[in-house]
Image 1: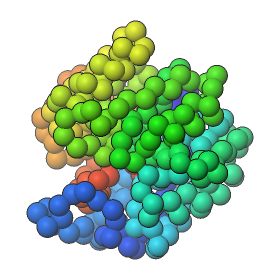
Image 2: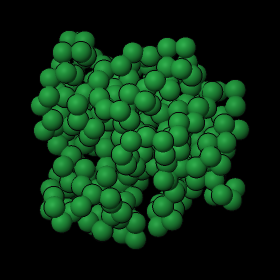
Image 3: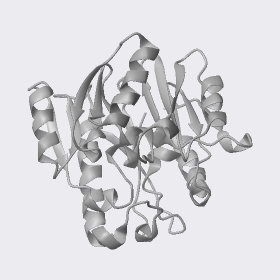
Image 4: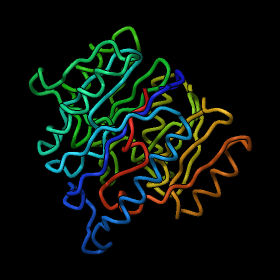
Length: 280
């Protein structure tokens, strides 16, 4: 991820997005506002374009409400990509069109399809790739067979480490609901028992290779970072979490461009900032 990606894949918002798979109690927070979601997605794509330059938009699929969460469909490591077999059966049809778009990206010379290997499941939201290491959450959506598939596919590129999320306190959909990367050595971590447990496992696996920025809000722990961006490093953070934002503005170097994104309708869909793009 931190080898200066030059392209971002995004996917247009499905007209059926309000019917997405979510564990959020919409009865308590209110239904997804489609008009607002469309504006938020447009603003997100505009921000990503400013940071990376080239954005490839994959068309939406009305049969797949969650298709804008393109991160789950792929795991990319260097010139090799895995087209995932997603953990939720209803979402597996999202992958084909994304993989077809990926075939036109010159930086990716090898695409391996996980669906050809029965029993393996991975959501990209469970995968954090850093130089030399890849951390994969064992969750409701990603299993041990999927981890082993990544390990074999990326052999010689990264060491793949499984993190058992079933042992954590509370319920978390994906690994990157708890952690994300600001740069190749700085991890943003939600300041709770689960977040700290994951970070401790990462440190144990890598001889304390990372430093952490702890934030109080779980939603805010997922950032989309562009440390190589020109003319200045940039990071997208969630708006409307003032305590976490204050920590970011204190801990992130002053020459960084911190961009706040209101993604309220995507939060209702279990979505986070990294969910809506794949950096290549």
